[in-house]
Image (cartoon, rainbow, N blue to C red; front, side):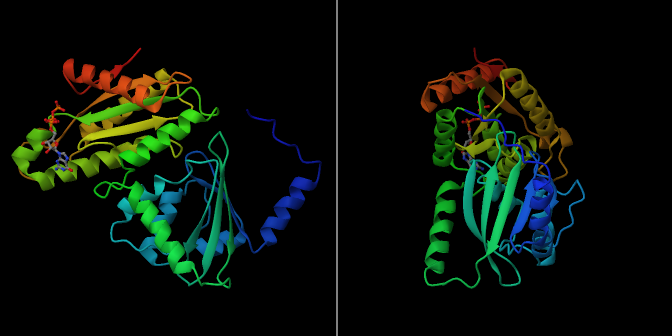
Length: 309
Ligand SMILES: Nc1nc2c(ncn2[C@@H]2O[C@H](COP(=O)(O)OP(=O)(O)OP(=O)(O)O)[C@@H](O)[C@H]2O)c(=O)[nH]1
């Protein structure tokens, strides 16, 4: 159940703003599209950013990684890293975790997410706290992330996808809720004709297209070899259908396979089974209905969306 937001008595909002400007706490506000809309001086200094109304969280991380400043990001593939972190970012109303900065500081970061998608980030410097169990804790966090992640695409794996689905079905906030099961068309032919590595490149490209098409609060998982799950909270069937149509357009234009062959042959398509959740049903029942819709989309000729009743 949502309660009406508290109204601050006159003058208090200004005081709150002034205080966070002076605070050593890092404070930042991201909108539903993950654009950095506000950052206090401590945040701007730590992450080396200036909010300009356009900068997204992913842009900020790309910049930090490229220039070796702000957040310490140890990866050779920043896009895969962004995908993997996006799987955990903004999915829960509240979470807390640790972040290392390139300058050696160590932050305790909290994220609070509003139903409409706004995210408040507040972080404090905990560099001077006892470090005794730190490596153990970090190893635990990394093991947990690895257990939830598909190593090829960086998306959530099947287990984490099903866990996200069960979580979202048990909450009252995100209704209506839609899910989609997506499967690449004639993928065996790509593998057989161009090799397994080419198939892997197509799978990774598809993962990028998926992530570029969804919002932060949506869930995205690879649940089989060339089968993917999208969870779309607070989305009715017409809106979900429009999102899927845009995704299919992007996929039709994608050309992840280089080479001299006919350009048309280097593209790929996907079929989509879409369904709206019914209050009280289980994750397995919902997934089975989306699977049946996917089967129907394949049977009707592929490269299309089938919406289950
Ligand atoms: N490269 C690569 N191929 C995979 C991976 N996992 C599964 N596959 C391949 O995906 C292919 C799936 O083939 P099918 O189930 O026949 O489906 P399809 O050819 O896409 O046909 P339709 O789904 O009916 O359009 C098989 O060739 C698998 O070997 C993977 O991680 N990498």
